[in-house]
Image (cartoon, rainbow over all chains, first blue to last red; front, side):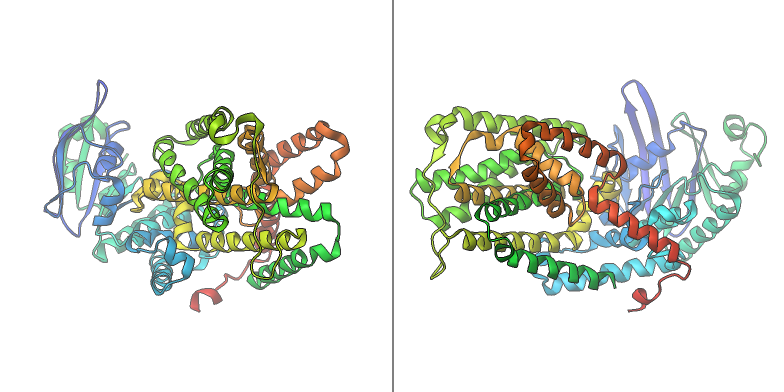
Amino acid sequence: MFLEVKKLTKRFGGLIAVKEVDYTIEKGKINAIIGPNGAGKSTFFNLISGMLKPSSGKIFFKHQDITGLPANKIAKLGISRTFQTTTLFEKASVFENVVVGHRLRTKTNMFDALFHTPRYKREEEESKEKALEVLKFTGLLDVADQVVANISQEEKKRTAFALALATDPELVFLDEPTAGINPDETDKLSELIIEMARDGITVCLIEHKMQMVMQLAEKIMVLNYGEKIAEGTPQEIQNNEQVIKAYLGGSVSA
Amino acid sequence: MSILNKRMIMIILILLAVLFPFIVPNQYYIYIMSLSFIWIIAVYGLNLVAGFTGYLSLAHAGFFAIGAYAMGILTTKAGMGFWLAFILSPIITMAIGLLIGIFALRTKEHFFAIYTLCVGYIIYLLIDKWESLTGGVRGLIGIPPIPNIGPIELSNPVNRYYFLFIMLLLSIFIIYRIVNSLVGRTFIAIRNSEDLALSLGISTTANKLLSFVLSTFFAGLAGALYAIFIRFLGPEISSTIIMFDMLTYLIVGGIGTFAGPIIGTLLIVWTSQSLQFLEDYRMFVFGPLLTLIIIFSPNGITGFFKHLTVKRKMRKVSIPIETKKEA
C-alpha cells in the first residue's frame, strides 16, 4: 500500500472529529474524500500531513510509520498539500512565491548565502529551474512576473498547486481546490489534476462539488461525523443508501 | 533596468556618505551621522526578525544593551584587549539571544511581542540593579576609545565616522546576502504563513531561531559600537524608550523592506535634530506621522514608493515579461 491509515482517531476534548478511520490510497490514482460540513475531512488531512497529531491510530507511507511526525518531515518524505484558503505572499511575484517551494530539497545555509559558495549557486539555480518547471506545468508562465495580488483567484489556486508540486511530492493532498471558483475555471483545474495524476503523482482531494468529484475520482471515501460510512468507486458511492441519506439528500447530482 | 537603477542609487548613496564629512565639515553633524550608522545596524537586526520573519521582538534594545555592556565590562573590568572584546561582544549577545530565543519562540504573534517586551524589561532591571557588574544607575565609565589601526588615528571624529561607516556597509552586505538567498526566502515564507512553510518542508522552529539569533548579533554589534563611540553606558540604553525609537525608525522607513532601516533612521534622527527646539513636544510630530504611516502605508516610506512603481508597471503591463525566464 502507498498510504495506509489504520484506526485513525482525533479527539478535541469531548468532541471526536475523526473516529477510527481505516483508509488506503493506491499509487497513481485520484482519490477523493467527501462528506458534509464538519464531517472531519480537513482534520483527516491535517492528521496525515502532520499539522495535527492523532489521538490514536497509525499512518504508514510506503510502509514507513509516519504517525506523529512533524509536518515538515512528512513533506520531505514526499507528501505535499494545499490549503483551503490560499496563503500566498500577495506582494511578491508568482515566481518569487514558488521559488521557496523547493527549499526542502536544498541545503543552503547561512555561510553558503554569505560567501556565495558553489552549493549556493547550484541550489539557487535548481530552485529557480524547479519553479519554472512547475509554473509551466500549471500553465502560469505568462503571469510568473505578476504580483500575486493582481492575478485571478483561479491563478492563485494554480500557484498553490505549483508550490505543492515544487516540493517534488509523490502524494498531493488538495483541500477544496476549487472553493470559490466558477464552473469554467473548475473544469480547467480538474484538467490540471488529471494532468498531475498522469505525471505519476498520486492525488487525494477534498471537494464539495459533487459533479467534479464523480468525474475525477477513481476512489471515494465518505466521512460523516468523523466516521467512514462508505468507500468505493463513484458508481458505488452514488448508489450507496447510507451516503444518499447522510449527504446527497436523495439527489445525486446536487 | 530596475537593478541597474538600484545599483546607481546605492553608488550615489555610498558616495554621499563618503563625502559627507567634506560637504558638512561640522563636528556635531558628523557625530550625529556616526550615531545614526550605529542605529541603522541595530534596526537592520530588528528588521530581520520582525520584518522578514514576522516575529516582532521587543527585546531588541535589551540585546543592544547586552552588546554594549559586554564591550564595556570586558574592556574596563576584565581588562581584555579591545579587538578581542569587540569580537566577543556580539557573540555573547548571540549566545544570550539563543537561550532566550529557544523559549520566546514557543510563543507567536502578540504573545511573542509581549514575552520579548518582558525580556527586554528584565534585561533593563538586571543592568539597573546589578551594580557590582554594570555600575547600576551611575553607569559604566572609562570604556577605552577605538585604538588606532596602523597609521589611522581613530580618535579623530572623521576617521571614526569612516570606521562606523565601514561597519555599516559590512552589516548591510551581510543582511543583503541573507535576505536575497534561499535562507531569506525561507524567513519570508515563515512570515507569510507558518503552516504553509511547514507543509513545504521548512523547519520553522530552526529557521525562526536562526533569524532571531542573527538579529541579536546585529543588536550586539551595534551595542558594542555604541559603547566605544559614546564611551559611557547607562541602563537607559536598554529601556523601552530606545526599543520604541528603533521600532519607529523601522516602521517609518518600512518594516520588511530592504532600504527601510536606512531611510527611517536617517529621516527620524535628522528631523528630530531639526525639531530640537520643540523638546519633548516633538512627539506631536512623530506620533501622528507614525499613525498615518501605519494606516496608509503599512510598509513605510519604502513600501509607499514600491507600491507606486508596481502601480506604474501594472499600467504598462500588457505583454507578459518573457525575457527573464528564457535567460
